[in-house]
Amino acid sequence: MQDIRTNQQRLWDSLMEMGEIGGTEKGGCCRLALTDLDKQGRDLFVRWCEEAGCTITVDRMGNIFARRAGQDDSLPPVVMGSHLDTQPTGGKFDGVYGVLAGLEVIRTLNDHGIETRAPIEASVWTNEEGSRFPPAMVSSGVFAGAFDLEYGLSRADLDGKTMGEELARIGYAGSAEVGGRPFKAFFEAHIEQGPILEAEGKRIGVVTDAQGQRWYEITLTGQESHAGPTPMPTRRDALVGAARIVDLVNRIGMEHQPNACATVGLMQVFPNSRNVIPGQVFFTVDFRHPDAEVLARMDQALQEGARRIVEDQRLEMDFEQIWYSPPVPFDRDCVASVRQATESLGLSHREMVSGAGHDACYISRVAPTSMIFVPCEDGISHNEAERAAPADLAAGCDVLFKAVLERAND
Ligand code: GLV
Ligand code: MN
Ligand code: MN
Figure 1 (tube, rainbow, N blue to C red):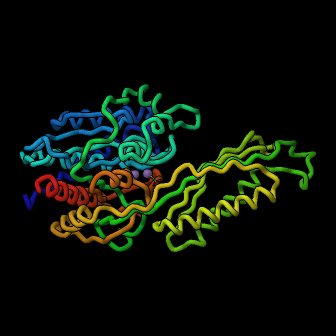
Figure 2: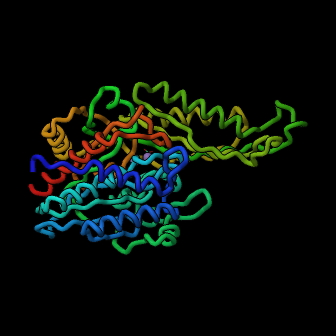
């Protein structure tokens, strides 16, 4: 058992095959949540799991659980997993790695005819990215009771299509209740999505915590008018107000270093015509920090600063914080399992705090949970150039295998 390793080539080949679904010219992946491509990715995962002897359950948020029976199938399962949806210009590894590493663990157990005392499951969580349907991690959030089902199903994209409608359309509105399934433990393997492991030459990130996040939606309203005859001093230009708030967001991020992150990533300008002064602008803000108190100070600075700007520009503002995900400490025993597995495999490692949000953040509210990080090239993610080395991905999968096996048999 000590010498068993997962199959690096099979894991890599599966990642590459999944990456073809929505594959982009630049070598990345665009597989937005609940699109036809997401359906194709889900179908492929389900087929692979059925071929590995698993039984499939889909819940009403479209979360998928592929179960390999245990010797005592009445015990709660040890669950692995992550997400298959990507950003519009995403990579082949963010999320997908954690899902297919789970499948690779199951395939390796099958190769060696190993039975586990508790069942083992590989899971897929719907719409982790929150790119098409904000907020992020919404379906693991419903599972963990952070949101109710109605809230989850009613999340809408920019065209007004809801998650409930799109789940039904692609055939993944399952019948299982969301949540209420006890997990013995939950482990999520993921690429780091930052530069630390690579810079330090470390193989494995033993993830102890995840930072908190606040997401906002802001609409500024001024007055559309002609770009020629309207004198500068009389204008109520919503885009000028938005530009000043973008600068404010960036300054707040810089003022709360070393750990704060502050981003405006989405903006819509109305009517978006080159010779009309913009009358309305909709944009988003993403704030992150590992310390909830600092995140609250950033929130206050944004609210006060934005109010001053709109007064100054004579604009109206609709300001809404649409999501707060507090900092998460992962389960100390699960973290210890990951550390032990890493050490017993002789892999270099360091402890780290996750900068990104993950389904593990919500699952940690209802099950002992932790994460395993592996390096990615130049720390780049949410980018088509996202890359990870096959040997690093396999090392993380070996750690997952060991940690899961230990938990399933204890
Ligand atoms: C999810 O990818 C996030 O925004 O952290
Ligand atoms: Mn991810
Ligand atoms: Mn992501």
